[in-house]
Length: 315
Image (cartoon, rainbow, N blue to C red):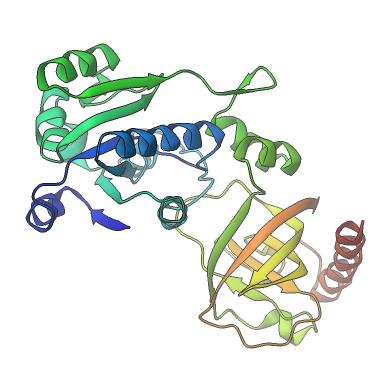
């Protein structure tokens, strides 16, 4: 799969693939849940039936994150998955191209008409499938009716997907974030179509876990918030092997931490995996993170948590 990183690389893409016409979709696709998967399958089907290649546009950062940095909103929702995980998912599912639309001041101010002409037309979009709530352009002024009119004038197939429901409930990233934050991984799996997991590179930490007899793998996480916080029983995938483990996502207040860290203790595991990417699949929440009076009390609680995690994973 070919990645186009930002609008500034659009011309380079056109030089490399001058005659490419695409079947496309646009969105954040946070979590790539069952509703998103339905859209992606239709994009691929349209591409196959009409001799096109498939393309997914995603915005980076998310609009809410941009406005948070600009100081115009108080908070942005946690991310279910970072953009790299989305890219890998699209790649595994046979998408030909992914374009990261850089959400910045220029993009925020782009009129709906300019979005159609400067982005969609330049990418030679011949088929476009969007969700039923899709809006685009400055102040989200562009809507589906505008897309339909543009498509009619440019001979572009335009379609929207009706709400995707499970058990009568609309599947949404918001619902999944809520399920994950509440530790309801059964519901999250039902809506995602797979277990919730996070993948990242193992980086060096302060070695505290090793000093107290519980070595941990510290996993790099992006600046965006994740919908997890606390202590969890997990399954860890290192290469092709699956191991049980326990994970803590938090600032580690007992040792004076000040930024969120995801650290995982993998049971019965001694290998050096610094620099490797591992996947942590969350099974059940054990407790919230808390500050202990001293390291000894923290250590005692960790061993209690490990015992609880092993019971959960063996069940």
